[in-house]
Length: 158
Image (cartoon, rainbow, N blue to C red; front, side, top):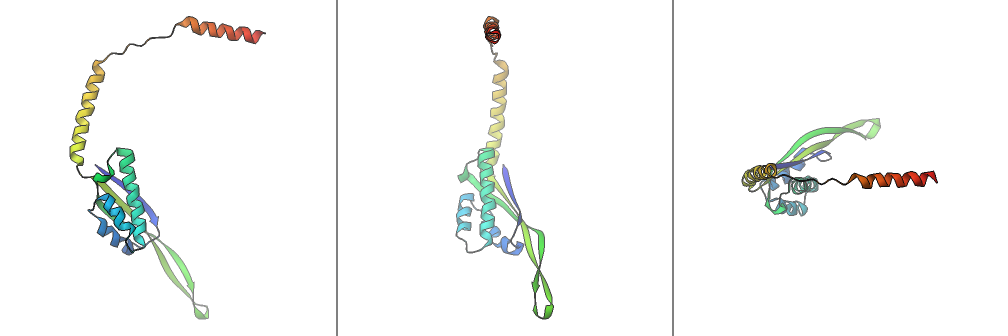
């Protein structure tokens, strides 16, 4: 099963963010986090944050084990760029762009196909057992409820 996390409008150029993204692709997720943590690139921190989010999504939402996750894809796409002004000599102006990027990390389980098949078999077995079972429900006697109502009515009258 694949789980993804997307970091949008991250203030780093796509060219600089693709370097750590290519290094991490195909690694174990836990090893990739440590690799990015000690990598001497500024954009490695941003990629690490998105990777940690993907790992958290897999663990929390789908119940996968953190140690069994593999980084299957890391995509760094171009986002919008902010246009800035730098003032120059003799009243002139130079424009430059501050680019942004969208980072997508897809994490998958190392043995995802086996787990998926076993889950569907278990789910069908649980449904079959639930349909054969019958539940007996006991209702509370009505006399107690009426007594409570009468007591409240007398206390209000006083």
